[in-house]
Amino acid sequence: MTLLSLQGVTRQFGGLVAVDAIDLDIAEGGVTAVIGPNGAGKTTLFNLISGFQRPNAGRIVFADEDITGRPPEAIAAAGLVRTFQLVQLFQNLSVLENIQVGCHLRTSGGFWSAVLRNRRTRRSEREVETRARELLGFVGLKAAAGAEASALAYGQQRLLEIARALAAQPKLLLLDEPAAGLSADESKRLSAAIRAIAQRGTTVLLIEHDMKLVMNTADTIAVLDFGRKIAEGPPTTVRENPAVIAAYLGVGHA
Amino acid sequence: MTNSPAIISRDRLRRGLAALPWAVACAMLAYAFIAGGYFVTIMSFAMIYVVFVIGLNVFMGLAGQVSFGHNAFAALSGYTSAVLTTTYYWDPIPAFVVGLGLALLVALVVGWPTLRLKGHYLAMATLAIGLIVYEITIQWQSVTQGYMGISGISPLGIAGYEIVSEREKLFALMIIVGILTLAATRLRASRFGRALAAIAGSEDAARALGIDVARYKLAAFLVSAACAALAGSLFVHVIEFVSPEVFGLNMVVLAFTMLYVGGIGTLGGPILGAVIVSLLPEIFRSSKDYQDLLYGAGLILLLIYAPKGLGALGNIIPHRGKA
Image 1: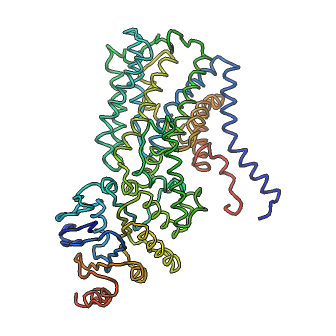
Image 2: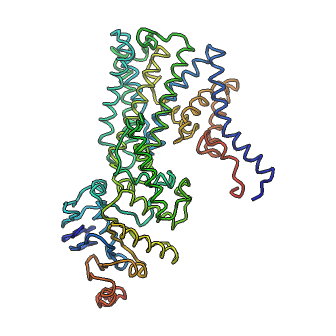
Image 3: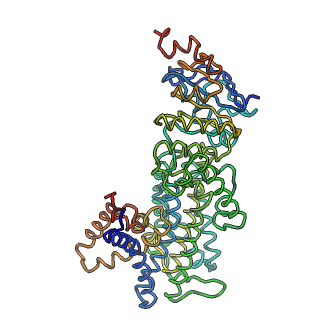
């Protein structure tokens, strides 16, 4: 079943067409990667899907709902949660609290429930904490629960951001260059974590430069160049596709 | 790491310094009850400001927004209380409820459009509303009696029992401060409070996790406006007098000073800040000509060496290895 479907999605900045009539279907389950050279429109595509930018044309359908032009918080509520290329942690909160914020969509309660703190609120808070600690265990950060988020090493911050997104229990997790700035070792652990997330039933869509990570992690790869999709398929076929090789080596665009 | 005596004494010093402002604040409040008189009024004044600053701390410290105009909400509610109780002989509590409603309505009208925008639009809008309400309190003489102000406002009262003595007033205010501090503590450790802190950290990340940023900002604005309104009504009933200057721009300056001195974003900050800052003019009074200079220099030193305020005074002593 198709979980996310892009139909002729286009975004222009002045005269520059950053994303040019892209059609892309992401099936439910597994890991899909979007790759392409710098400036190919990958990040713009992610911003369009997650609602941080509006497409000039085309439709975005997620879980049979048209989400085109909806604000990011509504898209997150529909079950599509993203991370950022430059890690966006809540530096003023502890590691545990960061994940608790991630549970926002899965809980309820506003000002009065906070101030009166009745039995229902207390129970919900306990559940949120248990769930947050579980997720910290999943990404191997259990020992850092009480630390300030800014005290973590960069690789750990990446993992925390992913765990925080998972706390929202998304149907589709969007990872924007999750391996950027990671060591080879950290990158390997990240790859294992992404596979584990997919195995637990969350569909993953990632943008990535790290080819090794993509080839080892993704089930399907879509290749963008100059805002267009030039190839799509499993890693083995994409790797041998002449158009992809040309795009990466700079042939044919002179 | 070895536990050399130097480290132990350093830790002790840190803890001692952290506890010092609390000891001073508690001692001052206790002294007010014993000594009575003028000092009780100073501490009552401080407690009213704690109410105001607790609200400001939710909006600025927790949610990371800026407002220069919360004095407007104190003025709206304070004047409503004053006019309804003196001219129309209402009881203080229903008069306060009307004042609170008016303040929240104005907060909604100002906050709704401006909080949807990123940047400093709200700060500018609040500055404007503060000045507008100030002008109204001066110009609308038939109701507010202009610069003259309204005197002879009835003291606080609940169900026929009036709180008349200065000590009783201070005690009642301390109970209100206690309740509000508890509420702020619970707020901070809740879904609502975390959402506000998330907005302060990264609006984009908060939205990506499904937090309706505009709505939460507005909610924080209303909560802080309600505290300001309560402070305004408490002021007119405790001091039993109101004039435009009471809720002028200097109220904002004073509240900001208290917020930063006490420690913005900390739960105890409003209490520490309000008590200590209210004492400063009394301490520096003896040095007449240099009063403002000493006051200013003290604030600058504090902001340089303890930017998180008096609540984090212990951080002046660096941890070993981090020095």
